[in-house]
Image (cartoon, rainbow, N blue to C red):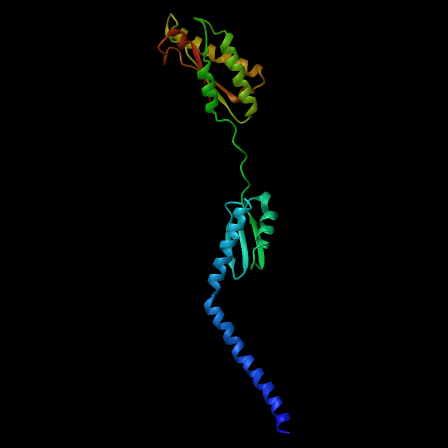
Length: 219
């Protein structure tokens, strides 16, 4: 009879042991591996997984085992979520999009400067007629403008070697700038994108031939 009576007491002892010891063990483990360390570990592994997937510049926040992603490229939202869902220990994932990626920049306006430097837009003496290599350069500038619809150009004419009073040189320099502008408009470039000015005898270059020119600056 004693043996039968002891069995309930044994089961009660085992149950009490479980109630007391198991929470103590769990508490000890929590002390050995505190929540901040868990969050830091998840954040590190999440960042590494995103980098390996080629998703850069994403903010990673961890609360417990929940991960919040910020600044995710709009075209990578689903992929980022899938990547983080696969990280061991992550419970929930929230994703917030960042700004759209800018379109790749086109050729710089400096390309026009380089183009004109390689083949200057010059004129014969006392003339505002656009011809020869100068006309070819203007055609190429027109092509560049057609490919960059937001770009504008300023055309500055010069006539430093013009005989006569300064007013004559001023008028000729403006006519040269207008000749280039007319050629660009004929190529389909809207006149609102073209500004012209004449500098007359100002800003001469070392030679007379080089001074008879139109400078083209894009912006």
